[in-house]
Image (tube, rainbow, N blue to C red; front, side, top):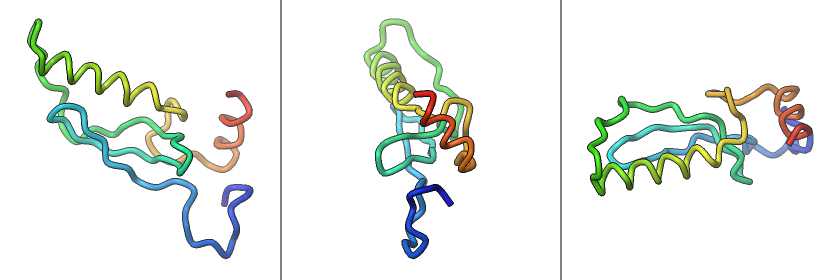
Length: 90
């Protein structure tokens, strides 16, 4: 239903992608080009210990994950109109 997607093509423009930061797991909708929605975490944020290498690694992974979010505020695929608007404003 997105413009440019061949109607005979059975692939969807967005698919579910598993996400991992430290021991935390989640998923998000993502396009083949890497444009993604917000992560839906399956477990709560871990308790962060001061000056812990595990905590630092988790924070770095989380920042990397969040830096790739294209559709801010979307936890599910945007409508075609929302998708086109996001692409135009970027």
